[in-house]
Amino acid sequence: MLHNQHSFVIPENQGVIELVSSLRKNFSVRLLAETVNKRVFYDTFDWRLYKNGSVLEQHNEGSSRKIYWREGRQGKLKIQLGLSKVPYLASELPAGEFRQQLHSVISVRELTPRVRLKIKRQSLAVVDNNEKIVVRLYIDKYLYQPSKTRAARALGNRLTIVPVKGYADDYSRVEASILEMKLPPAQDNMMKLALVAKGVSAGEYSSKLNILLDPDMPAEQALKKILLRLLEIMKQNTAGSITGRDIEFMHHYRVSIRKTRSALKQVKGVLPQDISEKYNNFFSMLGKLTNPVRDLDVFLVQLENYQQDLGSAAQQALQPLCEHLMQSRAEAQKKFVEELKSAEYRENIKQWCNYLGSSEKSDTPAENADRAVYKLADELIWEIYQQALEQGNAITADSKAKELHELRKTFKKLRYLIEFFRSLYPTTMVREFTQALTGLQDNLGELNDLDVHAAIVRGFIKQCTDEKAVKACKKIIKSLKNQLHKTRSEFAACYADFASADNHNRFREMFIDYHASR
Image 1 (tube, rainbow, N blue to C red):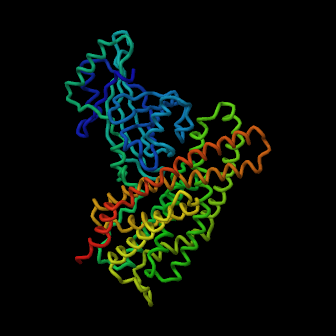
Image 2 (cartoon, rainbow, N blue to C red):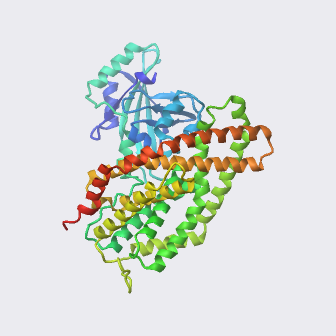
Image 3 (tube, rainbow, N blue to C red):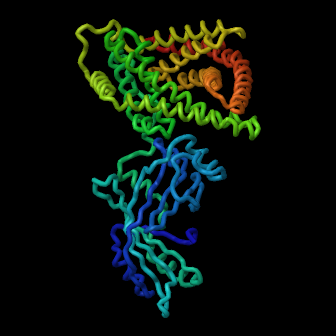
């Protein structure tokens, strides 16, 4: 009967004793035992449910545990789910509508407790002349406790009226009496109130750089600012990468490493050479540890799609491949975690952070250290853009996969430079450039993934003795080849769109003409 109960906010200037006294003027009210309940709101690290307007929460009332879901901003009613606990991932749920709803919002991200509330409940009962309970009332004091060691903060009091079956008239009389008190109706915004108390914005996490650079800023200062932000993103995703359930943590961690290396290698003559070489080697080592983990993560996600065209027998025969992938992923994850937990890793990260945060200049500054950052950005971006066009124009129908892979890396370098220095250019121009790049990068990225996945399956076939599994794997490879051929045939059109004369003129205006008047 959850949908029939009504809740009201008890204003701060109105005492609970006063409220109960008002009710007792018209009804026989009994005080029942006080209880302490809990509400736990679950969300992803990047608040995907909250941003979607959805809610997934767990109510603990004594020994009872109930899990509720409300989908989307228009969802008015909470649906009680028949779950014993909140899943970590949408994929852990049985196939069905709720799994689809949840996956559509959080994708592969992990659900964790984000806000915990304690509720001190004073239960009251309205009774009739026969001492039978005809209406239940709850006066709840909501408390937000950030941690076990920190004091709880009061979020406010609420009054809830709950009907009892068979006593609808009594419920209506009690409700009318409470409405006369002019209590504000309660909206289910306890999570928002807790976030305010916590001083947290649910939209505060972003894997984007979002760096504002002054065009005349010395290049060294600008590069340190960029690298410091990339280090911050790495740190934000370190704990989740170590846990390993939510594969997006590893993805963001890995991308920040790639961008760091790209900045160190492409933005030359800005940091001292020994610093650039030392940390390029360090981040290269980290990147190599993340490669197999990420490749296997992507393959495991895509494997379900790859199997769709296979019969049920072939899908079942692929179980040894799935087990092999999971085992390989666990081994790669273990090596990665061992590195991140090592004293050497922690010391390198500490020294890197201290260096980037220091304002001290080198005794012998690098040749581009004091150049205005806008001048260096224009040169670097235009140069790599020209290189991308040269490589792209050389691609033919007979080009090998290695050439396309090199082109993909060049376009990544170009994309990263734009991200580093995007605040130096008009937002509209940057958006147009990014949109022009997206289709081509998606095409090249899919080609790379298909190549990698085919290589993983071939590696498994070489050491597999299960004939049924080998036969099913060969069907997967055939399917991958077909997809690879289709994606490869789409490259020419994707590249032509990017390299069009109109785009070229816009890019020239952005990276050559825009700052020319300075």
